[in-house]
View 1 (cartoon, one colour):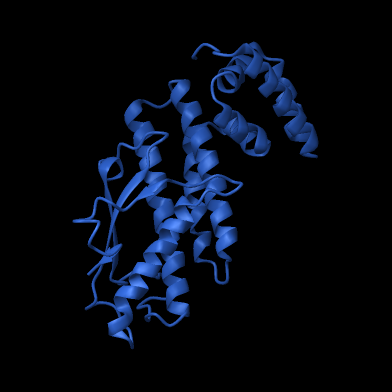
View 2 (cartoon, rainbow, N blue to C red):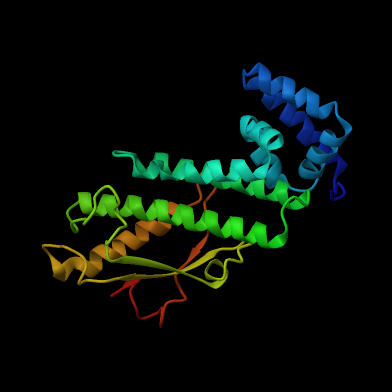
Length: 252
């Protein structure tokens, strides 16, 4: 485990985590926290988190139930559960604010999970970058599904498969840079190129299709990139498209 860079921050993190466990109202979480703090190996692990990273401290303290699951189950099975929980974006009538919050909470959980697997040596570097890249792809897919359903609901076009809005939609998001290479690190932004195939998109107003696609792309970036009280999912950059100063955000 890494050395604790700031014993003061580690002590403060331990205090905050213990307080959060008490406030959770779950006796199981409180008892587990006490057992970790009373165990030299467990205490050493959480001190390595709290004493080195304010972000991970916040993630662990703000979600003590998930932190407990992580320390009990380990990263592998829990990572799969977080990814499998993302398709709630297909739920009919889900508000964009609800989806945005759930994606940001998932990002905090994945960041904590991957970091713990990383610093304990449970995962090697390739597994770490693959996990972060897979999560970025999964959240992008979730966001794409939502903005496609939203645009179709407003009459921009007709979906070929309303229950699977991305299928045969003619809307293409290409991951470039570190995302395309599956080498995302903890602070990476994601570089995207967005395309659409007008021959595959069913619309009654083909002359307005480009405007619809540009607006859809803006909504997609906003859903992923906007910083809220829950943070953001990923910083997003669309400037790798050809001649970004002269071409629209979404290109035919």
